[in-house]
Length: 302
Length: 181
Image (cartoon, rainbow over all chains, first blue to last red; front, side, top):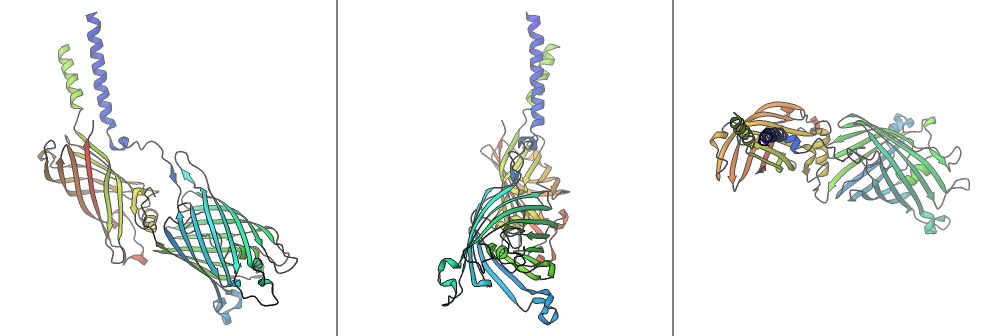
């Protein structure tokens, strides 16, 4: 019995010694941190700003951040040098977007076109993530309303307040693919209480497509278009298409682009784009975004 | 013979009970002097492992855990400067050169010199830091402040903001390590 126990004891002891050696290896800092286990990580910066160009992007305005946006659309380029390639005329929208929560943004703006005020609520249902329990896309819902503030005269329809209103509802499904490329699809429903003629449709549906390709850390190519699949008036409504570059300089994001659309809210650029790329009816435009920190950020794991 | 083996094994297992101190909640502060605005990121998830027997000391800092008051600054720090998707962490592996002069079992303050390799933004460099080590109530507190040149680690500052962002940054480390069991 004794003869049996001793080798057993030695074997056990040597095992424990080996064990402590193994333990020693395990003390390596990386292993201590358990970094071999994948963690869930949200995918950020799919777009540089909360708009692709015209329409909403899959990005939110950060919590406690106020985004002051000034948009300009100039006149048609084909006016030539006499019109300074359109720069003589400009329409604009000035707006504020505020991040109430990381997944909830509220915005308001006013455009010179139609003297229109617009407001929206944007909610992110799920954010694209990678690692453990990842989700492949971001999904957002947006609802907005517009109101024309043109003065009512005795012979126009604006004396009835409801005729001033329009609405839009949108879902965005988007994915950042790798480091450089982002694609999103955004089915959008637009309703206008009042339309210009009887051949116009009060309801319209467009399937928006937005894309970004990063050129450098601070510059990207962007595309934003809303093909209209329902409700377009023949030879009158054209689908908006905008192409541009995002340029980031410190606290600003510039979006310089060419577009056939003058409207700067969803109801206007889907419902009221009457210019046609095919006829060269395009203009230069730019968006300028400047963010202000209202509530200090406390959130890490960027 | 058996007794010898026995005691040898016992010794070996004892020796591996080295004095190791560890934390994963240390603080690292990234600070850039700027005439325009405060550029400061605070990381409260700095990991550090110290072996008092060999003097070896390791740090790991997750770049994405730096918190800046302005989200845009945090975004730029990650996206444009440190490129945290490509280089998620910075680390330091080194040795306290005068560790034998430090009594880790008794309360006291010591000046320490550390040499080793630091990896930041994918670039590894030999570095030498001076710092303070305090032993207090069985805990080891390490503090150090060091200037780093951004260009040493290939962190590019664009021309447009060259006046606003300084060429060097101050890295301050403050960690309290506890004995590992």
